[in-house]
Image 1: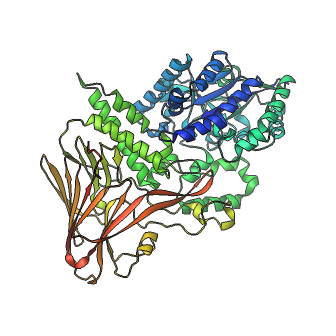
Image 2 (image 1 turned 120 degrees about the vertical axis):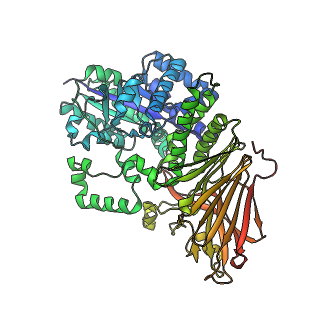
Image 3 (image 1 turned 90 degrees about the vertical axis):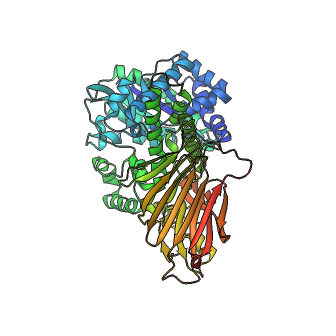
Length: 634
């Protein structure tokens, strides 16, 4: 028998906004030792993808690592893959942005290493059918996806050990199915099992085995450094594989080589799909439990067979529904990308390249979703997205006066009010009680409304014994009944304690958080005021051209207890001075979430809740937000 071809791909990535010391640790403990060990043992060729944000970090902080990659590429030992440069979910971008992201990555690989990359690492393997045309237009010939992408179309697993072809708009693209079993074997099982599986494939007459997965598996994930290096997994793996190569049982190939040598599996039209875990993470908690119940009913035997591909969760875009915070970032990014293209295309337009690059960085995928690896729950990653959105908008709106637009900002079928100037951008939601859902000041490049709502997640329901030692206590986390924003207005009972309020386990006497309010807009060059009315409340939100935000209230206290308190909750992602008239007692508490990562359950501060407590009998109040002294407004 001929040797089975083994295409090994490694994907190294660190997101925009991650801490330098975390990136350095991954380079030191995972990326570099893995490349060095393979190089020292002559294990080549293999395929490598280094994401654009990580390339930029390496160019600034670790040129020797890039030199190592360059030598391997020049010697033909490493095939380099392209991607979207800023590691976006390509399916979530406008088509022109997809092509631009991939073209930029190919240009950077040519600049740094002199290569013309024709293969693509598909971020999170999120596929939509029209990607084929856009990738082909960007110069891509082949792309890596999961075998599950084919299984959901009922293509038998036995046929997936070869490249396939697809097309869109008459433009074709080759797809390599990544073998899920190999993803779970490497590096978590003894190398002998890996070789045993390759020998099984070879005995069945399959010409190709494909493995491509995260480089963090080789020393970056908890426990993997000790297992892969200190306890010898990688050394044993190389011994076993090199032995099989010496006996003519296994031959290493790049994906370009496999495309040239292995006969096509045929034509496939892959639906909108991602990997199995991602589709489950995109479901709401109740649906996760139903899906897991269905999987238990089917049993391991059926899930190991062809029925598994027919059992599915939701697609990646459902994260934009589950998490309004993600959707707001996404829709802001789309709007600024379109604004940039419109302005950059004008005759005599100034150089807006810095704004374009900021929009690109804001497309980095990690902060937009949540699973074991997604970073929506990490405030520093969301902050990095908002910083880049603020930078792009500051450039694009330089010198502009205050303007008001009524538009469906979040695309949910209900209009919001968008206010913006050269100093500020804000979004008011009349359908949600006039809450201020974005308040971005361009001076500090901060969206002060970026505080994550405390939500129920499926893993919160796991029994205590399912959690590892050292994790967050398995007691019930605090949940919010209503989405967080600035100026979410309620009336609270006099006997409600601060502790109960902070826990979220209370019922307000009245809430406007989901009340649709009528509105009118009064604006001049200095300020815009949105007057909202309904359900016994008048709320005036005034935004000045310099970014100063103030809200005044009048309410009908009839029918409310005399000792009740009017309580506009303000959830702040960063400190602001809050001034209330009349002066009132206030409650402050940190907004903290409990989320699951590869390290287990973790508590993460998301911001601070500030709630003035105004005697309901006063019938009126005002609250103003200002930057702390020393912070420039522009």
